[in-house]
Image (tube, rainbow, N blue to C red):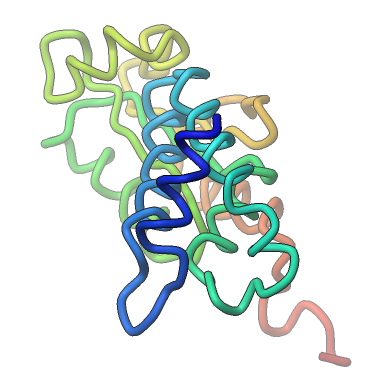
Length: 177
């Protein structure tokens, strides 16, 4: 731990016009841990955050990217898994719904089978390997706080699921915005 702390102090302890390498590394470790379901990567990110804890407590504005990573570390990201073939128009419609929304830190993966493009993820992420299309239609699974909703196959249902859990109101939902 002392070596990590020494490294953190000597190399990049402030974000400037570009974030320092440590800030980017922590963020990437957390995202990679979520994609691959790897606790060891999350633990490494936690150790780096611990090494920077004094600076983050006293001057968080000096490390905005790492502060963002710290929030990401403590708040489970929205994970959206779509079980279906990438080329399928219905899969693309579900992807369009996800990509049209601002979901900070979201994880998006296509579960297209062990022989598909997500082969590595299938071998590394236990949950992903269990997802299947529903009645032959691509299905979207929305996961928050390490629990997944029931799968949906319609873009409108996916939009509702994402919007309901995002804490955002739709325009027109409340006249007293």
